[in-house]
Length: 503
Image (tube, rainbow, N blue to C red; front, top):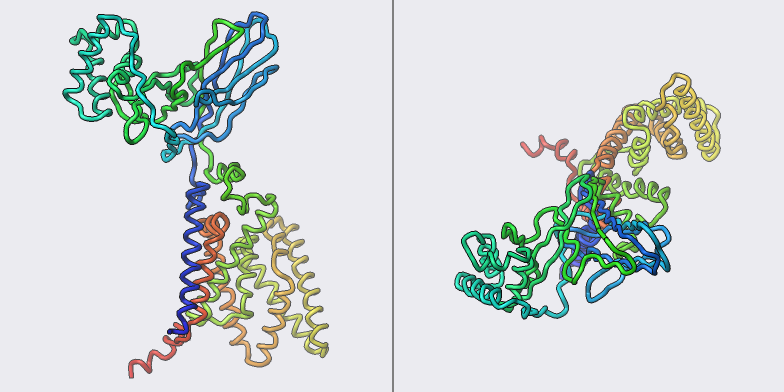
């Protein structure tokens, strides 16, 4: 058995786990895979008005329940003095307002925020519905209904096609006397649903709201739901179009009434709506408490800690760049992971001011270190002296930048003082032992790798994925482990010995 097999299996498990958890997070929490994704949010307000006559009042309004194409984000009621509850009555979700006594004109409000989600579908019914049949036709209407059903059956083969054929016949009432007779007293949707139920196909009337930005005092449109093997399918009885039209919110699906008011009269309900576009990331964070999968999400942390983790989770990206540049390419740097710390400082200072500040601090520090070497101090005392001097240098640069009106001068304090002091000490020793050329090589290598790490960490896609999908760091870990097993020539060595290959 290959001794490396468990290692490669562990690497493969890390990659699979990272991708699987990220996919689950994306599907369950709708976390966007790319930054800048925006989501359409509809705010719909139902306004109920009626005249109360001094008795106890109960008002009940059908509410949207898992409407196809939308997800309910939040809902609230604004009705001073009234109690409000959301109840399930006969499988229909309704909002119920109640008050002990009311008199005069009453106005109640219900507001709901909905997110457009084409993948949102209502839960299928626990038991398939049964056609209710019809026994309320008058004698001429019963004959006309039977004639339409028989005519539609001849050219149909399924509940969907039967519905479409009946809609065609009803919409051609000018030349069809049976259709004209049935439509004389009822709407097309009502006649269609009754005919389908009489034909043994479960059907019901649903009330939909056509969403248009900034529209007020809108009413509901009647559509027909037909039950098929694929569940409830919506038909527009005016056009015969199948499936829910875009931006049609099915407010009421089934049930006997949209609004019931006890203790009042002349009740009306109207709808107003407003469209907004908000970042999808904000929606995910605002809804992070609603899903059990999000219990381990960083969104639950306070904002200050979230900001800290946004930077911490970028460190593995910088570490990956350093490992690649040192092991695969063969770059020499001053300090193993010094470039990562410099890159993190660049994130705070921006690149050009950070480079100028870093080079200035190290250059002045090397001059001071040259003077300290003449004092023959012990190592600990020399490093402590360098730390103090580096702090003085950065403070001076910050004050100088402030006096000159350069705001970037204030940001040099983000540099890690202890690490810079150690870097100055190492470069000074390197200068004494191997000369200035090696100092320049390692110094340039550190800055070059730091700029590469900074470029990767600053890229908005990496920044977005590292914080919102922290499990992807398992893939970075797998890549680091694989590169840690590399024992071949580095790219710089291949270039160095290219003449041998020609011989």
